Amino acid sequence: MDKIEPFNAQILEAACKVLADTERGLTGLELAYIIQDCKIVDVDPSNTKWKRLFNSLAEAQNKYQVGNHLIMFINRALNPVSYARKKEAFEWRRSELNVVLSFSGYQVREDGQVIRTQKETTLRGARERAGALRIKLEDRNAHQEVFNYCRAELLDQNYFHAILEAIKGVAQRIRNMSGLSTDGAELVNSSFSVKNPILKINSLQTETEISEQKGFSNILVGLFGSVRNPVAHAPKTSWPLSEQDALDIFSMISFIHRKLDTTTKIGGSI
Image (tube, rainbow, N blue to C red; front, side, top):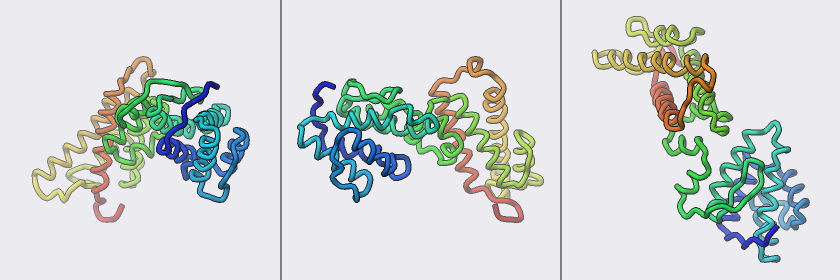
C-alpha cells in the first residue's frame, strides 16, 4: 500500500464513530480482533468502542505519520465475506463511511476495499456521492414508518421492492388500527367509510371534514391500485422506476403515515 497522508482528527473520529456505532457498528470482540490483525496497539481497551478505536488509530498515525492504518482497518472491517448474512449492516457502514471518507478523497467500493476518488468539499456533495436513497429520504424528513418496513431494500437502492414493502406496511398499519383482516380497496373503504367509519382522520362534523376523509380514502385506494398492484404483479424489468419516481412515491407514503398518526378509532382506542 502506498503511503497515505494522515487523516485529520475530525475525519478519524467520524470514521471511528461509524465503525464502532453503538447499534450498527462492530462489536467489542470484532474491534479487538481487527485491531490486533492490523498490528495496531490497543491502547485503551476499557474505553467506549469508538474512543477505543480512535485512540488506537490516532496513536498509530502519530507514531508513523501515515494514514494507512485507518484504510487498513476499514478494508478488514468491511470484508464482504463477514457479511454473508448481514448485508444491511455492510451497506449501512459502507454508506456512512463514504460520506466521511469523501472529504479526504476516498471511497469504499462494493467489495469493501477503499480506493482514491475525487475529494468533496461540501456535506451535500458527500452525501450525494454516498448514493444512498435512505439519505435522500432522511433529507425529506420521511416518516419513520417508511424505514421500518423497507430498511434492507432501501440500503440496496432497490426501488422496486422497497416501494412494495412500504405500501404493504401502510396496509398492515391500517389493519392493526381497524382490527380488520382485509386488504386493498376493501380494507380502505371499510375503515374510512363516511357513513359507518371504523377510523376517522378528523371529527367528521362538517362537510369539509367529510370531504377530507373521502379524499384521504381515495388517495389510499389510488396508491394501492396504481402503484402497489403493478409492482406486486409485474416483473421488475416491466415496470421501470426512476429514483425521482421512487422518492415521490415514498413522500406520498410518508404523508399517509403522518395522517394515520392522528387518526382515531370510532368507539375505542387504537
